[in-house]
Image 1: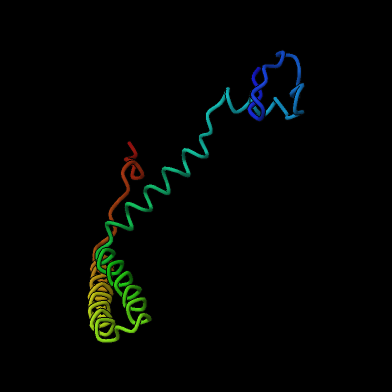
Image 2: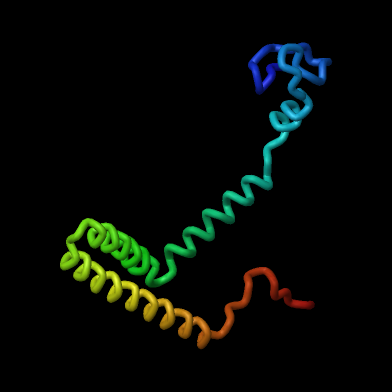
Length: 124
């Protein structure tokens, strides 16, 4: 078995690397079995990010915050007129993003809940 720490080839019957002393049992377990928990977490994270990006106003809100940060940098270098103009643009974008998100959440509250597929079983 090859040690994952130092790369030395060790006999199969040893539990620790003969060179560095690292445990080889964990190498056997991880190489033999995939990690479904990590795959599940990655799938959930990807799902969360895609849901966030589908939310109305996310792009406007992100753009507004980025322009606000640029406004602060520009203002710090003494260009207060350009900084003030960027500040106004960022405030307008953030306002529209918040309004769009609020409209979408009110629309979702009015919709009836959708039945989950497979949860409603017919009794015969």
